[in-house]
Image 1: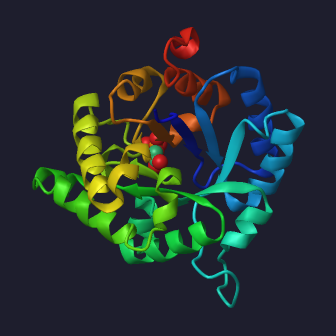
Image 2: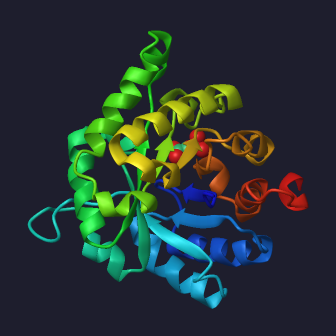
Length: 261
Ligand code: PGA
């Protein structure tokens, strides 16, 4: 049984004060839920968010993630942040290979593989993002693209840590566009990813959680999360407000009446 995992990706949004206010709001709306909750603030707000989570009594309940990391532990890499730095400020997770990193910052799957090795050896759990562009989908190359991204990004994954790994399937055409993959389209991609993972990880692939990402909102989350291979969500826009993020979390908890609030 895979525990659902819902993660907030704030991208380049929220100051320290706004991050602290979010933690207070989350304490008000989160309630009990068997879902694992992760929040990825920008680097500058990680420390403030960690303190605010403790103050709100949520530090054991909500994990913190970096949105990116450098593969080297330290050195002359102006503007970069390392795995030990993220661990130091309280991160348990790191998001790797988000499509914005791939498209806007030239991050290849080879770079993602180096970062994954560094994250795993430094004690961070990774959320590795993959996904096809609209052109690739229209050219019927979705599965080919996903297979290549998975194989290359996970090439140096630590085989003892497969159960900790999280994959986020995020079709690029659905990110920030308001256009979500239908639950059927998403499930088909997730089933393909799971099958590919079984070739890489063997039996442990059944433990790897696969999140869906791309315009997830309180209104569409329950339908997506009900599919057998959709084990959670990576949420951008709808994660900026603690109430809507909490509603998505409740959508991932079977039988939770607050899901529709
Ligand atoms: P979105 O972003 O929910 O705003 O589409 C998702 C993501 O980029 O992780």
